[in-house]
Image (tube, rainbow, N blue to C red):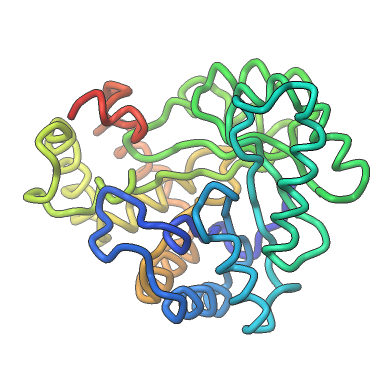
Length: 301
């Protein structure tokens, strides 16, 4: 299992492309991106989450880490791009090619964690990633998951060492099914993304799109709990996910230095107390998947 100095990883998709329903500033310029990475390290964040599919993210990271003298001080989680259009017989060579390109862009000699970006690719081509691990290109291997069902099918294999899942106060699919406990018992490092649901949990009510307005009554209940505990909703949301059994770290993006420092502060305070975490669970009913899974939002638009 990976060791993390702070149970937080900086998501860097925003540094490579405009991203997120609540994003009003677009992609930060290079100076801001470098400042964000410097602030992350100064705040105790030593893990960065990226992917070849995140626009210029790997390029920005490689340049900024080199200039800041941090290349050997942080660990990177990156991902194998979508292989659906790649002829199966060429997949091993294509995977080696894209991961070698990631190494070059990031300016490092091996990749601490590599995940398949698509569940379907993991099911078909995990052996190819394991062979690259055996050759020293990769330390830990795993998959970015969309569904608990895919996690269940991969667990018996025993080769998965790290996963990334969606988890938030509104989305407890992986914990409800007991998969987080199973991952913890097997020493699998779990990175949890979408803690703020791309900002849906934090944007003003007036900004929430009409097709997602169903979330508002539940969010008001969470705001009430946060206020009673003298917390912001952002802190409640992040620390709730840390309270979920088996989560090693939350992956949170940032568009500014201030956001980085705020999130690091929340993470340093650790998981919510058990009684408050249970109140959050009781306040949130099981919600429709097309409300809590961002890639399904177009169905509601």
